[in-house]
Image (cartoon, rainbow, N blue to C red):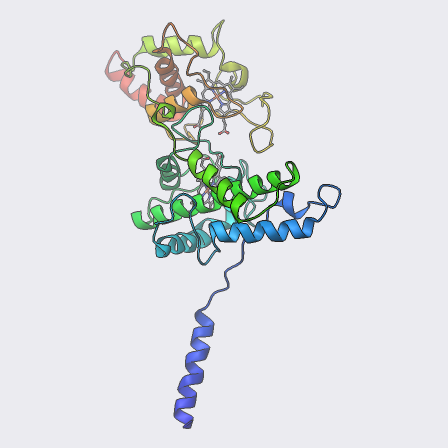
Length: 338
Ligand code: HEC
Ligand code: HEC
């Protein structure tokens, strides 16, 4: 080889080497990592088998696969993984367990996707969220938490990263399902079982229309009368909301509300901060009250004789939120409706 060629060849090797970034592999969840002989005969073997099946169904960080949607272009999901590593993994963790290096000390904690449970959804009965729900949160963020808005990303990247969040979510769900099948049911882990469990997960994510939240009535006008009805239902003699949110809605007294689905002590939202984690439109707030956010119960059937009450509650909540109050003061001086 002539020296000049050799130098060019060596230089190309070096430049390729420099561009290649190290992509960390997926990890197993802490419950599988800490699984001991007392819980399962051969924990190491089980970990290996589960990791093998997860790779078959969900791919690797370089080549992810989405359960239930095998036709998605591989480049789309790889792009999603890239955006995720750059913008989300620091908080949500490389594998989506909500345990990234920046997660420590955050309250609320970044979402652990692996349970397949989400908060800011437009469905009822603990049903899986719509893809649009996740997209909305990523686009708009959760105001008042550390979850930023990514509205500046191109739509293509938003779509890609949401699909990648779904890859990680399904991977987490499949991991639990495989672990439960092996440890609790003593089933043999093989291709057939993994394919069946993956199919079950895919089915759960097809949300039937009757689980979507459709408001029971059309939103009545935002008037003092409506706000007053909402106040009565919130904090009056038969009010139900103040028990967790406080009489003034600020939840300042840290009332005990029970654990959230991730096992952490729940905390009612401060409704006076002007920052709604799940969005500030009337429909956003209606959905929170209608569907609940565990440990907050759903109030879909809370007012069978007066279904407009859900809207009155929305109006009262908007009224006590700081942003709305400022607007009200301005409008109040100009007209007799709030
Ligand atoms: C600085 C930390 C941080 C970063 C960076 C971050 N998140 Fe989050 N994320 C959070 C926190 C905290 C929550 C939980 C909010 C809550 O529980 O109210 C959350 C929640 C979520 C949820 C769940 C919403 C629901 O309905 O339960 C999704 C989906 C999500 N983030 C996606 C993303 C994506 C995608 C990215 C990157 C493009 C990202 N996040 C970047 C902190 C972060
Ligand atoms: C058992 C306790 C409990 C009761 C009762 C309760 N809530 Fe909640 N509420 C919570 C918790 C917990 C959250 C969720 C905080 C989180 O995880 O973001 C919440 C969240 C909310 C949110 C979402 C705020 C946001 O930032 O997006 C609204 C709106 C709300 N509650 C209104 C109400 C109304 C109206 C009632 C009465 C009809 C009510 N709540 C009753 C505990 C409760």
